[in-house]
Image (cartoon, rainbow, N blue to C red; front, side):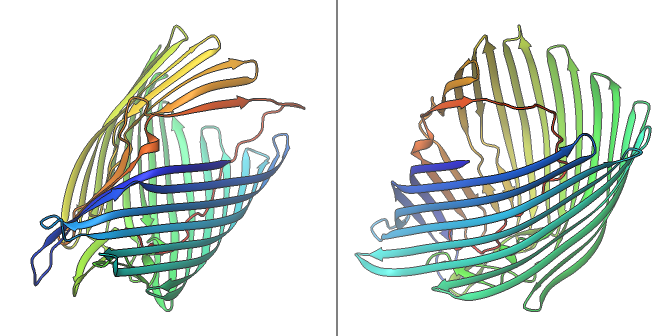
Length: 511
């Protein structure tokens, strides 16, 4: 699969800086149209062997090649003195190449037993370049260059054993992931890092059924280890999980799931490196980060009758000592880093209603919910509530089909940053002739202002950032597909395990 995109972008930022020994000031960034380019190529070569209900073997060679380029030209100026402006240039380019091999084996044994094995080996090679300049009257006032070269080698191995009984099932498994990451940082600041990490876990789970009641209980034991030049952590954990389901009838059920897990710090946050963002800000890694504990609870209630179906979803998640951002002053600079903060909570109720297909032609769906966040750091406490919705309609008549979807911002709040979700609508119409399908699709056909952005609520250095992408409004595209098959047809087995590694582990220098 190949994805190529060329877009014109405009950035608008607002940043406020509160100093300890001089007045605070706010500066604005007014962008001019510039270029964004993406080229993503995904290649897969797969071989599968299946022997009736006994064996299923799959070997896949994959390649992921991603190139991104973003050029930004803007004018920076203090809000109370627009004439005291500088011309800013921020050019970034990243290139990632990641080949991997994925081997999957599923063996069905006698007496309702099965063994499943999966191993994945991955190599990730990354290039990240950034040039940042501020000029006043053509005189260079700030000049930052960053060149990052990274290599990561990783291995993931997982195995599962299952035994089915009349009304129950016993399963046990083990998973090991290990990686070595070597990064070189050059330019205005230089450094080299060599990071090693390993995660091993084993679990046992028993599930059964008693009349209308289904239950599953399990426990997982894990070991997590990280090392960077003698610094790091080692953590052993015992983590329970439970799933309870009650079927009122064939048309309605209620299900609860609870699980305790560990969240490991991102490699990019653990690196003992700092990168200049601009003339006032630094991004710094923190090798003293520790794992956090995640308590996850979900409740589902489903009801279906005739053409009507509805569901209620409720999520509550609590994170203890999460790895969240922190901003502090260091002389005249503001340092952006990550630390183990106090807690983070999310409450998310959601309702979905579906109707159809009416007369075997029209299907309607609407879902709406609320995200409530509570983020507590050592020096901050933020709460945020977001209402969101998504509605869609699908119509099919003879050889014609049409689809419409609309959704508003489903935002996320973590640490001190509010990330705005996408606000878009999509319309498509297609016609099928035998195995050929031809159609037209439009993104935001009735809108002219597509933007993505974020907002930071740090008491020392708050900011608000927007990027406008003109080509994402009133976009029209033709679609063409041809389905063909030949040879003997059979029902292929489905994979039960899917492992991959796509985290390069480099500390970014951009805003």
